[in-house]
Structures are given as C-alpha cells and as structure tokens.
Amino acid sequence: MAKKTAKSKGSKQLPETPNELYYGDNLEVLKLHVKDASVDLVYLDPPFNSDRNYNVLFDEKDGSASAAQIQVFGDTWQWDEGAARAYDEIVLAGGPVSDAMRAFRTFLGTNDMLAYLSMMAPRLVALRKVLRDTGSLYLHCDPTASHYLKLLLDAVFGAGNFRSEVVWRRSGAHNDAKQGRENYGHIHDVLLFYTKSNTYTWNTVYTPYDQEYIDRDYKLVDEDGRRFRRGDLTAAKPGGDVEYEWRVKKHLGVKERWVADIDDEWLKPKKRWEYKFVRPYQGRFWAYSKDNLKQYAREGRLRHVVVHPKSNFRLG
Image (tube, rainbow, N blue to C red; front, side, top):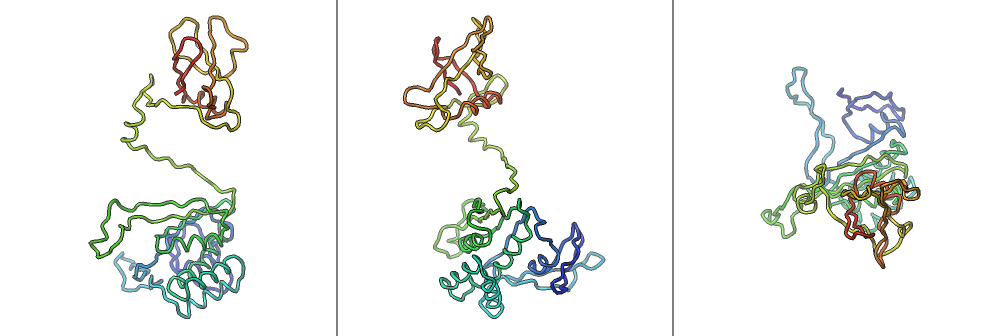
C-alpha cells in the first residue's frame, strides 16, 4: 500500500486514489479524500481509557526505524477547550445528534466521557455521509462506553437502523482479582452493527459446529453418511398454512423408505405405487408451511419413517 499524509487544502476535496493508506486525523481524511456515498463497509475500533498515546512511525529508505514520529492522539480524554469546541460545533449543527449530545451533557456533566463523545460524534456523522445506502458500519468498543456509543449511533443512523450487538469473548476465564479488582473478569468486547438503510448488503457467515454438539445431538447417520436427528415438526399454535395433509409415496409392496409426494402425484396415481398422508396429531399444527416443507424435502432434509402400516408417519 502507498502511504500518504492528508494535507488540508481548505474545504476542497482532493482526488481519490485507490489502495491508499492515510495517516492522520480520520475526520480530516474523510472530508478531503473520501467521496460521499462511496463506501460499502466501515469498521472502526476507537480506543477508550487505554491511557496511552498513539503515534505514527516512519521508516527510513533502508527500512530502519526513524526517530521521527507524530503523535496522532492520546487516549486520555479530558474536558478542555478543544472538547468544548467540538461539542459546540456538533450542538450548533442541530438535529438528533445535537439533541443526544445535549442530553449527555445534562446527565454526565463536562467530564472525560463527554469529551470522548464530543470527539466521536462528528466522526460518526462523517462516516455515515460516506457510506452507500447499502453500506454497513461496525463499531468495536468495550463496556466502558458501549452504552453511550449506542445512543449516539441511534442519533446518527436512526434507531431503526440498529441491527445487532455482537459480543466478542476475548478470552476464557479471567481473574481480575489478581489485579486487586473486586469484580467479575472483563473478558468481552462489543461490536455495534448499524446500516445506513433497510436495503443493506448482507452475506451470511457460517462457522463449523462444535464436535461435542454434533456428537450429542446428531447421533444418527443416513445411507449417505450424513448425520441427522429425529425431531417434532409440529407446533402448539397455528400460524399460516399449517393444517394440511402431508403426502408421501413409495413402490407398492417394496420394502423401501417413503418419500415426499412433492408434485401431488397421488391425484393421478401411477401403477404399482402406493400413496398415503399424515396430519398433525390432535391439538397440534405443522411447524412449517407446506411450501417450506416441500423445499426441505427437495433439499433432502426430511426422512420419513413408517410407524403404522396404514397412515401414520413420523418426519425427522
């Protein structure tokens, strides 16, 4: 990646260059180098309460470390003239973000948390501005400020565009008592997921099942080696198309497993085939619509078991 330090040229936006890494204040970079509605995904991990300074380091041409460095920001937030100026700018802009910041000041007073929120507010507004309508934002934080940041994000994006709060467990059991803390172990961070609109891009993420879960709940194996379990496909309450007859078929007189009659072949039965049906037992309803159950059958996710020679079946 190329490296470039953002330089201010008034309000004029500089030409956009792909595959470019910018060093410096992200608010400045967003205003000067990122076009409105041009970003699909934003991930940000703004530190809080780390009590350390964050620097930009430069390398010499020979690759050795340079003594030159620029302190970008210190993660020790205090209410001072800079924080007050940032607060005033966002409040004077008006709108829901202004309302939220004034409410924070009423509740928190002029302390380090309000200074932090005054720094975050204009940056979140700028990030929303560069997002496409189909874009998403993930804000990584910890319980120190996550509840305040969620309220601020509600004001920036609209509460209806909050999608989820993801809890990331950073470690297993952790004993903070060793550090003299009389409290539970702090072992998780929070990811707040927001979108710019209801037409956002979503790609489902799958992860492998734990082997312990597979061994416990999917003990049965079918003819193709796939694991499965028997389940009750009925429900206690109705809802939609859930009182139909489920039709199955198989070759007459042949010892084989029943299969779903997806195409309603029973209406024009074939020679040497037999057809049966099953309904939910008394007081129960199918848990899935007929269309959904047919789709499961097409995907090979239903297994029929004959439990009575006449008409009763169990689906699993």
